[in-house]
Image (cartoon, rainbow, N blue to C red):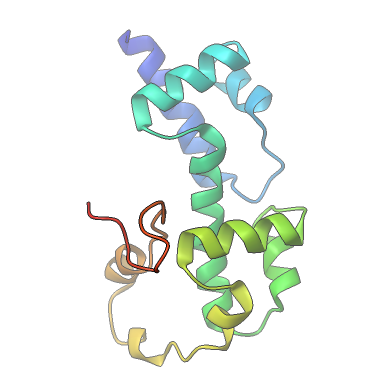
Length: 141
């Protein structure tokens, strides 16, 4: 893949990291990368190993986890705050990535993570795609 394409893909990925709470779709992100939607989607998947939508939703779920741990917002408010417009889709994706529903995650005690640095917490709480066994065990990485 040409270096210029990688630079533009990185710009689109940086936009997803920064503007995750905005209404972003593949055509808008493709315009950021100065590519057609199809070329952008294929190139993004080749470069980063996942689709643009999957990457964006992972960023949104990471932020949602932080907001839910605070406990001062409802699940619906968190859903809207991270840029999702459908509570059902948000809940489904959250459950897929985290392994429990947003409501269950919010209700759980998160006090054990309060003493660790934010940079470690971000790594420790990063959503993991659960495409492995159906018995709840995470896939082997």
